[in-house]
Length: 228
Image (cartoon, rainbow, N blue to C red):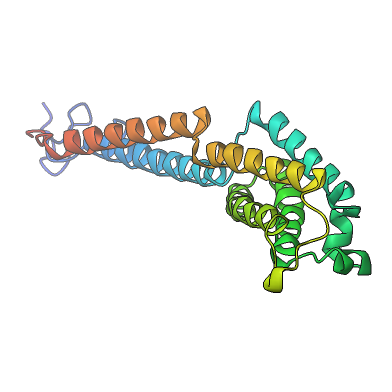
């Protein structure tokens, strides 16, 4: 009859003070899972913020793009039509001797400059690139052009100093350009302040994702530790 060596443990029995190396630790597994889920949430949040910043800088004119394009074409046509008398908008822009003979005032020149810069150039760039800040610049410039156009019209029908009246009144080019910048101002204002459906969907997704993160963090905080 052999006696078992007290220094050696029975291989069939596991030491209760030591964990089985072949069996995963539940606490370690839960911790690794929480770390993985947290990193996934953070990566998802970064991607969502990046997409939101990209979309926030863009505009979605929709059907208004056609109206804006037509208004830009009208503004271009107004530049080749008579601004006053036989002087076209291009001649007012370059202030040719014919424009000086027609006594074209400074407000008429400012109006033509504003129509060219904001009503044609900036509006075309905003329509092609769909950038929000270009649409905002076009809106501000066209709004100022509306006031300048009113003053230009007024200057063509108002006697000057000493009773000198301008030789010619308002031309069709001035009227058409003024209408074009009014249309551009209205539609650019609607485009700039409108929010696309994609932007609203991103905001809803951000709110939902933030609520899920908060609920997950609250569940981890209130989770009781496992009893040994």
